[in-house]
Amino acid sequence: MKIETIAVHGGNIVSDPLKPVIQPITLSTTFEHQEGTMMYTRLQNPNRKSLEAVLASLEGGADAAAFSSGNAAGNAVFQALPAGSHIIAPDDMYHGMKMLLKTVYSGKIEVDFIDLTKPNQLTDAIKPNTRLLWIETPSNPLLKISDIKSLSEIGKKHQLIIACDSTFATPVYQQALSLGADIVMHSSTKYISGHSDILGGILVTKEQDSFWESIKNVQRLAGAVPSPMDCYLLTRSIKTLPYRMRAHTHNAGKIADFLNSRVEVEKVFYPGLSYHEGFETAKKQMSGFGAMLSFLIKGNANDADRLIGKLKYFTDATSLGGVESLIERRSKVQAGDAGIPDQLIRMSVGIENCDDLIEDLTQAFDSIY
Ligand SMILES: *Cc1c(COP(=O)(O)O)cnc(C)c1O
Image (tube, rainbow, N blue to C red):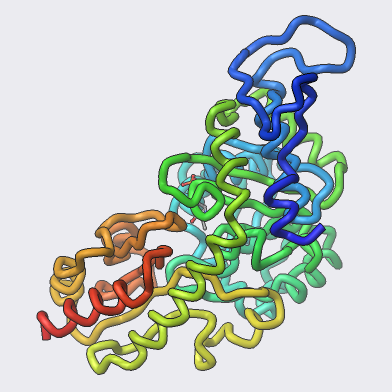
């Protein structure tokens, strides 16, 4: 099956004798005792199983585990590690996940944040207690690209578990398991939901090994599981994911070129631009460049805010991956994070008509400069 077909059919595990065409919503928290079926919704539920089935197929994995947020999914990986483990993570790791490691895991797990776009720095960072290499590519908000295959090869030589946050890439454009990762993570709040109305997270594993069993225990026993309704809605959203990604990416490519052509713009960060540092690696490991981009305008934070304030179709809000275009001055969210200039603007390009988006950007630039 090709990806569009998996997206449509992969979540149908219906066992109802009436043979409904879509997976029905099963809100029941408990099930009559029977041999070999479900018992209690924290442990498993038909809609969660349906969501996990389609995501495991999309990523080419052996199993998946759904959580109530992306952070809860990442947290399950950290919680499954032995106490005192050491993790290597990217220096530009997603802000919320970095805060999770720095606060909740402070004193429990050791972490080093390094530049994973340079695989040769990885070897030096590995310690005797290093258990996990956490990759995130493309990264937020500078769209840095890390080479999953090279990093996995180094990690495997040192028996590390390799996990990759593929949220920006989606399962449509990047198959991290086939590039050497053991686990893929997504914040399904983003493109997988695609409509800015569901919070969720997902892990997909290459193999059902003992580490995966520990993760499943965190899911079932710590209990940060999504509701049947959210699982149903996510499975529904996934049916159009490959087609949404096409529209998102088409628009993002055009907007990246447009921004590049404006004299008011200092630099555009988009992996599909041939001058982007990660362009070659992105071309090798992704089948599309996605629809997140950021750019620096000539001027200061105030100029960036004025530009954002003039836009009609881009909402000044955080998050990403919804059908509607969003824009924000990133340092409002990541204040104090090194390497995020005050005038950096991040954009999640939606699926509106691209001509309207470019017209909107044009009038905004023209009116502030
Ligand atoms: C949003 C996001 C997360 C966290 O997901 P939540 O659903 O907000 O908990 C993790 N990684 C990346 C790359 C994200 O964009």
